[in-house]
Length: 176
Image (cartoon, rainbow, N blue to C red; front, side, top):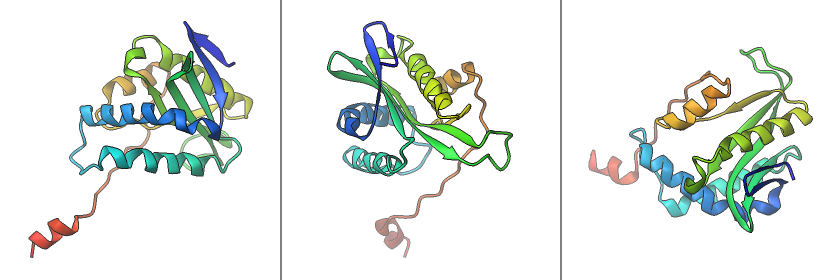
């Protein structure tokens, strides 16, 4: 056990917990839709988890990938999917290992309970045990609450990704 947040227990898990993450990921997917799509075409909800699960499977090819899982009884109510980036950053003054929180998600019913803080605290302790004292995470454009959460933790925006999504065949055909 990594810690507690009220009656929620935080545990360190690996690949075996992936089935527990699907409902939480889909809630995050829905949350991302509720804050906006940045003007870019999105995929259907049913396509999202298989793609995210594949990303997680690929991350678990590295033995230093881990999940901090928040459990209330037998129900997962939050998680932090974490892995290491090896090699110092080419711009920022970092150590040779950077801990990356690939995904941080808290069930909507838990969002005012400080569970996100507990998950990040546990993730950062685990990163430190692995030798990573620098931490990074991505925030979806428009997710102001998440950005404020990370700022309160002393994190600052460093890079903004921009994206162009290719036209669909139907859109391209209508242009001719």
